[in-house]
Length: 85
View (cartoon, rainbow, N blue to C red):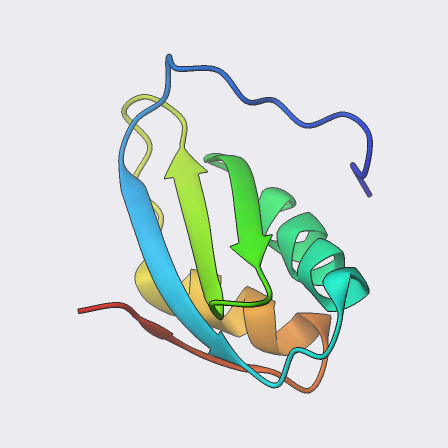
């Protein structure tokens, strides 16, 4: 769990945005972020509970399957996720 060790810098690769449903509070967002940040190749994740959007930034040159990101969100709790259009 990396609640206070977020790695947010500009030297990162691709960005993936997910639309997440089922969140109720900021703790939901932190649970999702932590689960996503455990995936190798993910630099950081930032969830906005109000908009239902999670932004995932990957390490430079990393390739992470979107299905793995969606599965991580679902593993974090009773949430559903899909890639933003």
